[in-house]
Image (tube, rainbow, N blue to C red; front, top):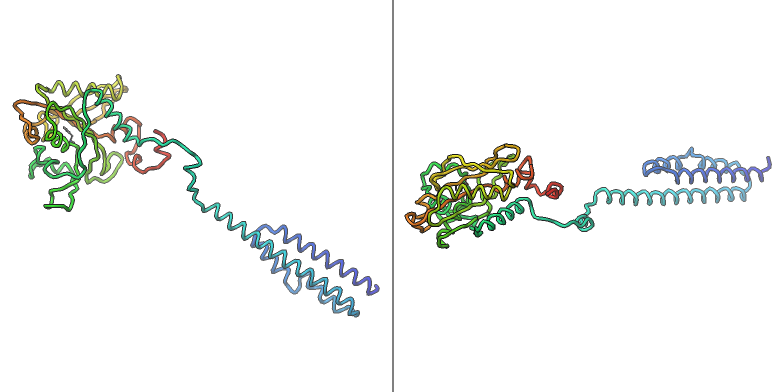
Amino acid sequence: MSEQNTVGAISQAIETARDSALQAIKSASDLDALRALGVELNKKESQLNSFKSDMGKLSSVEDKRTIGQLLNAAATLISTAIETRTGEFTELEISNRIARESLDLTELLTQRRRGHSHIVTQATQRLEDVFVGLGFQIAEGPEVETDFNNFEALNMPKSHPARSEFDTMFLEYGEPGSVLLRTHTSPVQIRVMKSWKPPIYAIMPGRVFRRDTPDATHMPVFHQIEGLVVDRGITFAHLAGTIEAFTKAFFGDDFSSRLRPSFFPFTEPSAEFDIRRADGEWIELGGCGMVHPNVLRSGGIDPEEFTGFAFGFGIDRMAKERHKVGDIREMYTNDLRFLRQF
Ligand code: PHE
């Protein structure tokens, strides 16, 4: 074979090897494969490097230069191709990672949805509507209360055993034990009696606090609605009639109510009231009774002239019953998937 032919054949082989290397780089599936390929191509025994030894066999300086330049050009092309591909893979990896780890804070804007009130707020508003319809006015009191309003004025002096039923959270304020987070909405009765004149037909919704461990039916913070009527000639029949009228207005005509004898220091006589669902099941809703004369007196009202009744029940529990929520804690995790159902 003439040297001319040899040079031609080597050049051809170099070009073929170069093209297959470039093709391999192009089709490398990821950064790791590309790295392995680079190592392979740089090896002494690699096909392209083997041409270097072939070069030594050529006698003509001219031919050596031709082959040398061809090899150099191929090496440059290959290393550039590897660099470019590496860059592409790195960028792809970064953008994949950004996509994977990104938090879409515009989610709420792009899926525009009209918000609505929390189910407990909805229940409170419906309760207010029903009672306003029955002629009641709405009053509110503070969540931080005095021991006096929360207990003392409600016929529960310091040593009263009923106090222990209310797992009270006291505040470090004033005399130790004198300021607390109200354990029920009943202290608002005292505030209303002191600032309004009878006839009083009031409901008092609000947040109340007890030192309870959260479970499916208890929360340390929950909501109550208190009712208070003080007028001349108010009897237990008015209380029973009001509870029944409210039950039907709020839950529907297929619901009814019943009162069971009970005890509260601030009412005498006292009762628990239950409502009966259409399916016949009874649900305990709250407490009620005729306002105790001592409580009327605490509110500055003469029990010889006026009588009254009061009731109080949990709003959260009503919302839970109405919407068949299994676990009351679910209502307070603020999970939109839960809240959107109502
Ligand atoms: N305050 C009572 C409670 O939290 C409920 C109640 C209110 C009972 C008014 C009677 C009259 O358990």
